[in-house]
Image (cartoon, rainbow, N blue to C red):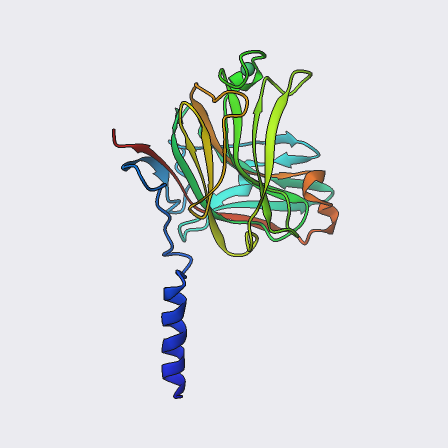
Amino acid sequence: MPLQLMRRLFFVSLLALGWCAPRTCRAEPPPGKEWKLVWGDEFDGKQLDESKWEKVGDGPRRKAFWLKENAYLDGNGHLVIRSKKDGERYSCGGIRTRGKYERRFGYFEIRCKMPDEVGTWAAFWLMTPSVRRVGDGGKDGAEIDIFESPWREQDAINVAIHWDGYGRDHKSAAWKIESPGVNEDFHMFGLHWTADEYIFYCDGKEVKRTDAGGVCQVPVYLKVTTEIGEWAGDISKAALPDYFVVDYVRVYETAD
Ligand SMILES: [Ca+2]
């Protein structure tokens, strides 16, 4: 068979299997509803849009630091969150919409590529100060982890809900979700949050449905971060700098 024909057959079969190029692969919100894009950031341009986001830091975070300088755009349509070591100090960073964009309910999605090294975990999460209110479960405020990725050497992510603070009364529900290939290339992680339940998605596929804690009924802000901590393994074994790369964050609501 001529080489050209073989190549063509190869790509045709990839298309038949649903393969698409990383930059052009676009998820849609869950089927069965009419969705409207109401907020988002494609991270185009050279400067982070600070009308939408605030950089976290500068300050200690767990045993490392969050520094503003570690969150920046690469000029090619991506947010980059860097983890690095200066002398003995490890740092990483992130962005959040606190005081700039807060909402309840809807479909929240990120498309991103994990860091390469052990010791850092990437996350897309929703947060509100009222997560600290004890009583009334998570209805009066919850931390909703759309995905956390502490496992460089396992094909899995974590999804979780936390409520009633982080002290004596802290409660949480978490699930380890098997996700083949999650540490390679770009992937989409989504949450459909209604008044009655949370539905988590990975690459457009439902992976968890829950109302743990009682579903949060108050507005939250969005956070995209990297953290350094033992949960993610031993940072001293990491080749730094390392990068968490985000293609977009989008929020949809039902048209009705
Ligand atoms: Ca509560």
